[in-house]
Amino acid sequence: MTTYFKGFKDEFWQFFEELSENNNREWFAENKERYKSDIVTPCMDFIVDMGERLKDISPHYTAIPKANGGSMFRIYRDARFSKDKRPYKENAGIQFRHKLGKDAHAPGFYINLKPGDMFYGGGVWSPESSALSEIRDRIAYYPKKWQAVIEDQDFIEHFGEIKGSSLKRPPRGYDADHKYIEDLKRKSFFAMKNSTDLDLVRTPEFLDEVVNTFEATSPLMAFICDARGFEF
Image (tube, rainbow, N blue to C red; front, side, top):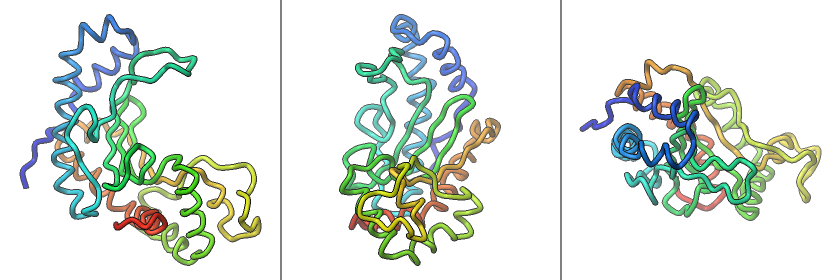
């Protein structure tokens, strides 16, 4: 299998370190070619290589090597309704979402690349209310299937537990005494592995590390897809 990805090298991390100190349009304009060569290019190589390997995990997730409208998130922040007016994100984000999903809230595999804050895994982030209800219903009505997810040994070894922001109280319509009420309270369901291994991320072997981590999310991803009526 051809491998284009050579690692996220020193210049990748250096760009974001400098951007965090110069997060303004003038600096970015002066360094836009660096952004293309040092950030976009290795991300595109990573996406191309991951596309081939994703097929072995699930043929229903897409890897689109485009800097805009593809698997790589835009670097531009939407600061219209935020007190934080910094125009640029200080990280690279990549998502491989289900082919039936139209936005970042669809089930997907994700990787966040930021100096001091690197993580990767899979799940669903803040799905719309109807999708969230479908996931909660599946947990409520099929507790043994949910138990199989959270007690999967490979899953536990990689992630420990399911994560995601939660309601303070049980959602309306669900038994407050349900065995998995804490999971029913969740508004997101994901499993992420945090890493500080910059030596590995600078090498082509980082691709294998991420693939293995994505594979470990399979019980959760399959459960979410079943709840949504998607193929996994």
